[in-house]
Image (cartoon, rainbow, N blue to C red; front, side, top):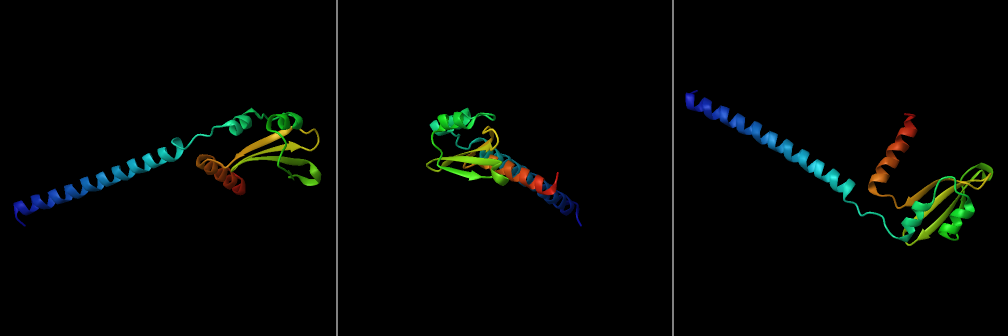
Length: 134
């Protein structure tokens, strides 16, 4: 092989390495941009129904929650023998669900639906961790 051929071969190898590095950088930048867009540029929740949800606190009495949110649309028993129950409110496609203790009617938990994609991701991670016992 001539000297010129060896130089051309080395140059083409160097070009392939640079091209591969550029491809890796472009893929990483696109992945980071996608993660940013999915996590931080979601539409934020707002409106009176969301504001009322934010006012509900763990430990509130059922009467306080009903006074704040109005008459619930539905009630579901979630524990055995009525030990837990949930009251549900709807506003269009939005839902508030508050879980109460059957013994003293205090709120134990709350959820606002539909979940954002970030909330849905962490919900699935926690569910998966629970199934694996981690």
